Image 1 (spheres, rainbow over the protein chains, first blue to last red):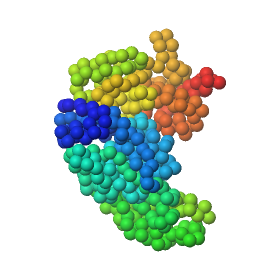
Image 2 (cartoon, each protein chain N blue to C red; image 1 turned 45 degrees about the vertical axis):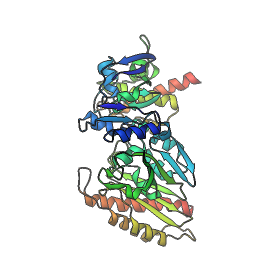
Image 3 (cartoon, rainbow over the protein chains, first blue to last red; image 1 turned 90 degrees about the horizontal axis):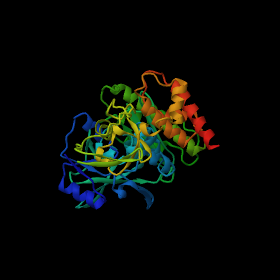
Length: 285
Length: 158
């Protein structure tokens, strides 16, 4: 096995082009588990830990360009105002030790349906930035996931950043698991309201072959919410939203939970998060 | 491959390192520093927690090559030959150690917390220790230890 240690993004892209089977490693919180348990023996590791370009975030044109290796700890500490949904999800990742190392690039690269960053990125309408020596392209996060652990990433490409629109309204995230820390989500849900565009974004985690949006639920809520005179959310709207989110899920029975439980829990998470978010709009009225 | 790194203030070199090997393996098996413990090898238990460039991490999830040129502080580097760190001392005084296997990782996690936030609430202590499993104590004595260590550190600063 080779250990490739590029010092810049240009070097990293060149190394990936020359060694397409090299496995990128940043925080190592997924990759090292596979190595430690003999599940994977790639010909090379491509260490992205020294590529400064990937460890930065900045605001440009109304969105945040979040480098692939910015840690969850930094997302919690630095991005809670501009990307509240992602920051909430980041706070639920693993443990302090995991959050100190792991980031969104690796979460996307692993493409697990249960990745904690995925629902808020879907809800916010984020795009994934992919780069190679051939150039750079962006893919809407909803089109990035192709199946369990499969993504649109080409073998010579690296995930360099996510482009996340700056929050234009309240955002929420909720996750079901057996404890607060070190949990792979049984199911999770991200919600983003855009009070200017009067639109609703959703993201379902761990209840389908890929993270999913609930398009019908989004359209229903956008039409049903009383944007003009924000009053308290009525029970019927919250319930219908929850049912539509549950209907959009495509869960299976597995060791973490049954499909029926996941659907039920998603309906609960969806109506709760809608209530929490709408409280911010209506001022608790 | 060869890996050069600073551990507890001293330069070390490990040779014949397999590129897929973890920092934990290098510390324990190549450099004779068995303080950080090897248990789950998947970041779940926290018993291998060390500082990497001042940040607590699971040493089992850091590839050895990623530690090249970096600075590592293990539990061996907290106290001295004849002196315990206040966090270690607090664990002893409160009876927070039973079998002791999880202790080095918990001591690092607690050390990080009490130096970042010596006035941490119980909720903040639980959150800071959420990545460290202990199967003996039931955690109550560990919480006592962290509270004691925090008050010692706060007192030193006052």
